[in-house]
Length: 179
Length: 179
Image 1 (cartoon, rainbow over the protein chains, first blue to last red):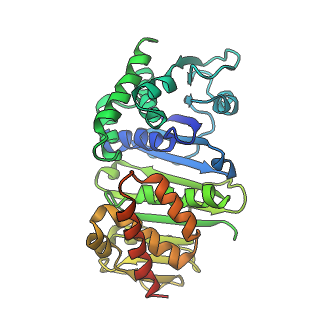
Image 2 (cartoon, rainbow over the protein chains, first blue to last red):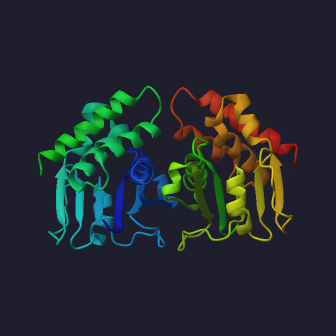
Image 3 (cartoon, one colour):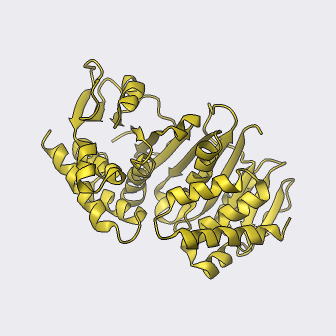
């Protein structure tokens, strides 16, 4: 696999930043590849838009900026409106069933999954990132499941392992139905 | 204040990545400025070297990469060896008393503080980032103390507020002695 660019976007409180970090660390620390993680905050961060960029590569990464993601996760209408137009033609868009206005069918592949509703069922908005990661790994295989689980466990507070793993697996399940 | 570039570097387990995120969020979310946070992981991430880059600016940030930090925090000998040469001539290096080989006196200002020993006293390696942030804000005033505290409280697990605030304040104290 060559360089892969992933953007995870949503709103504050969904754990988008941590989600991106976990993907990058799964690749770099547990799979010995190269990865970068980046986010930019403008004054709109206060409002709640959130975007996390990850690049994974088998070689050193010299340009750590994402212009056209291979994979875009967009959890809100705002995120879809802002970023769906940037996805590579042969890329993947993963979005949420709560997003009502999807972009006109592009060349990329689109998956519409009940990520946010599943998070609410498991625990609440706070585990949205875990449901997202579970779905992401099933659809894109961007990192291995074992690496992902290790990276999750290294980043979450002690005592929250069970609920986070439950959310991750719920995300995997909703994605498996779409394959 | 124009653009300011900050690098926090150390080893895994010191919370360097979260430390960088908190500084960026303090500036962007609680002070309405612009900020980016970036980290790159190579296969050496497994070994434990860790580096977190933050840029804070009053205007939009078009080049989110740090080449020559205005402020470098280097918590280990390896971090000092790798990055001290990149600090801007009028910049600031904050390092730890456990670092035995300091670089030849450059044009930048150097502060040597017992950050790691203080973290050990308060709770252990895991609060190194909080001690670091306390020292950083006293020496550089890169973000306001109130914004920093709010950003910390938004990012740490519930139930750990008291110990993290204690570590932050311990970091402020060791820095105040050096002013």
